[in-house]
Length: 115
Length: 114
Image (cartoon, rainbow over all chains, first blue to last red; front, side):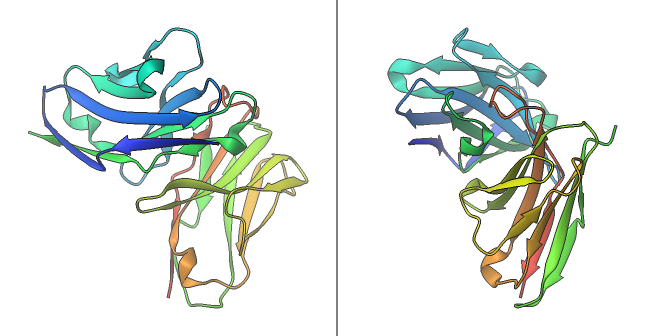
């Protein structure tokens, strides 16, 4: 069984400030981890994924996430927030032994950027 | 390249009515998925398809049926809509089944059941 917990359903940061969105996972096997972004009235887009190679993963739009096994975390960061980053962000976990049918999504964090 | 498209974008149904949601992809993907998104619950898989003519149940299949008669289309049916099916429905497709294969999502269908 696997699950993800996203701490904070809403996060607000000022434009230019650090973005930190938290995700903790639970998995009985070494997991694959993902961050997706959903812009208003659009479907989800893959931001980045961790698949057991480098623990620091770089994604699109300047985002990155670090896999920390000891903390069972996969937090998403961006050094400087931009207005266009306002969206909902979903963390997801999967068991590498299974396919997309076993991908488990978190409940999402809505990011608001303050001008 | 339109990617993944969904029809309709928004629909209001009365309890007991039926409807079909259409998902189409032009990327020649084998795998297609239907999810529902509810506040505070993330995305949950309803049904999925591993190829033309094959479908399988996901996490929350009750009250829904699906068909994949053509590779590019994946239909989600509600035979007798219930208020609990009020949700935003997303279709997705991928080339392969592995989670290493990126899923591409449609823009969603917002359904309200009164």
